[in-house]
Length: 195
Image 1 (cartoon, rainbow, N blue to C red):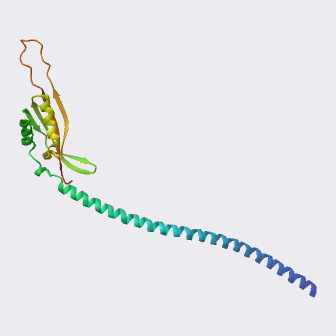
Image 2 (image 1 turned 90 degrees about the vertical axis):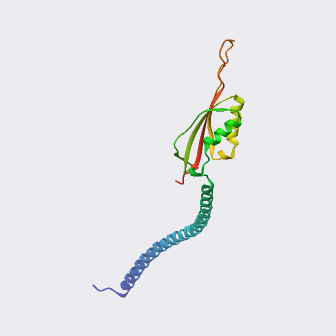
């Protein structure tokens, strides 16, 4: 069977319409995908700008922090250099005896422990613990504690404890003379150990 010219024309128009509709849908889909890609690309570019400016801010902050760290290290080194070392520490026993004599107290006993390491806020110090026992008037004992606390030779030491004993006085006339008040003063001397 032979197709006439009109049939060929209708068939050609039908094929053309089908091809046109197919191409239109493909174009519409690609156009939608392109719009999505453009939106995604615009979002990525915005994020990139934010990341770049954020990176610049972080780099500036890092530079500032490194400068601060360098200054802090320099201050720490300076402080460590000026902090007394154990070898240069004062002879506590001589100074404690001198202060006790000044306050009119009798030194009964004096002892010191072996140096030990102690870490304070990440810095290692050598610590020597001292204990001095004295006898005398309570006011004199308090004066001695104040002298130790304010004496520049004890700048790197702290008074850790003071234990004052005041004996009871007897009301009996025949009782022996009461003992004098006494005190045990505990100190800790700190020196930089370099650890």
